[in-house]
Amino acid sequence: MQRSDETESTAPSTSVSASDFGLDGFGTDSGEDDAAAARRTDSGGSESRLGRVFSPKSFVAVLGLSLAGLFVGGAIPIIGFVGRFLGLFAVGFAVGLLASRRRYLEVGLAGALASGLAFVLSTLTSVVAPFAVDFLAEYGVAVAGIGAGAGLLASLAGHYFGRDLRNGLTQDI
Image 1 (tube, one colour):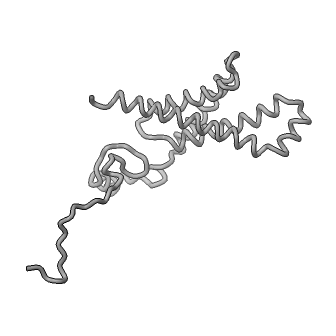
Image 2 (cartoon, helix red, strand yellow; image 1 turned 90 degrees about the vertical axis):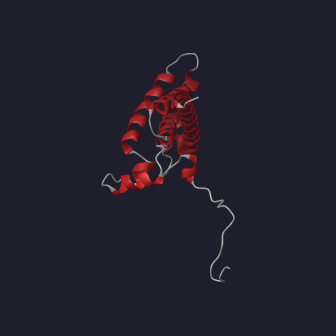
């Protein structure tokens, strides 16, 4: 017989957590369970929440690579302007393929920053200087925003496909 203050639960739990899908923390895929993560953070090797989400060292490296990808991709004579986005895609793909952790935030931010800057600078250098300055005074934020958005999409798409290939190469069949 059951007392009124006791409840019997016969239904299975239907709660879903990120650890059910192999994700711990904020986007890392180290594959460790919650107990191992707790031991790691409690045993002196504590990693800050910001460190799990964003790595300044990785961002600076990816930003440099993104600027190089923009320059090299834009220098290709036939495809020129589109080559910039192919360069960002290639950098994102390489980072996704080679990095052991997910770097979506770093890659996206670096691609957006590099592309927005490149759009503004190319507007200044491709048009007569007095007209370009006037044009950027009126529409500079929109020009930078369009460049940043396009760079963000190209970089993130490259990183996604690089991570996908890495997952396919390292996963057992």
